[in-house]
Image 1 (tube, rainbow, N blue to C red):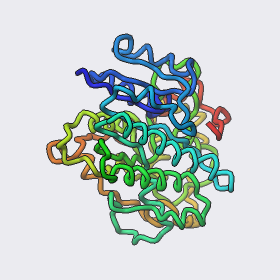
Image 2: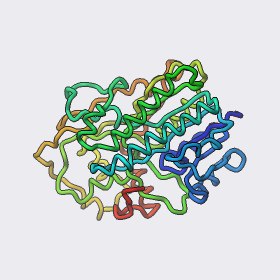
Image 3: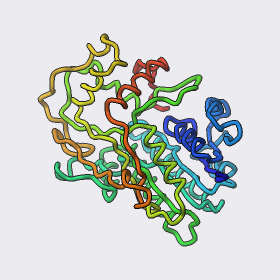
Length: 353
């Protein structure tokens, strides 16, 4: 395969797996990074010596900084976007502006370069942050959107950033003369292992989420939603490989492996051979009788229901053909990776990274 794909955010938790998946699929890869040294671990991947070129100095807030990386690429997979939770006024500057400007910077470069296909990473944050507005027995689908005005009111700036960035991407893709087809991926909270080989791996926000179950006094009566990083990376590259007449272009794709109740995640940790007995002793056993307020998905104590048919049906029918990794393997592999990378301590997490 001679096709060249640009992967933005190539050194990130998801982006690095996308690079691996793209190399395994035979693509030549242009990976964007902010610094020269941060991407060295990617050079150890199979196929990297001949088919990976890294472009440093790519900044979401700097127009033109992605132009050289995108030049000569027929496909762009845009994963780069800040991810951390922030509920004070600084969140607009730290989250919304980089996500929105980054989408504008990258997609305008795609237009100028005549890119044919763009696969964009959005999130279920742009889908199911409804604060209880949808009935508990409803299934969330790709037609659902988190309301921007409500997210603004709640100062939920991460979720607002995903809504505004994705909507802006669709606006660019719908303009007359836009050369590319767009496919959007909407993964939920991403678990799974860190790509091996990193000299200085970081504790990412999505993996940090696993620690909230340790040392808490009780189990919340609410649903979560999870997916494995390897499935998400695979979904992006599946779309990137599709011909221009694929029925999946112009569509969103919910990427959700399961929506377990918190109690189910806690039990998966308790059942895991990767978690030490000392750590298991920190897991809660009692159920919190207080029902949490509704935020994401179904209002507690109900289980969130997701229609993921589009992501699992065959590519010949406009789907992605994903066969999702299950909850227990996700929990096992995530925790095992944290221990292996000496990140099994929440103090290793830095909010602004």
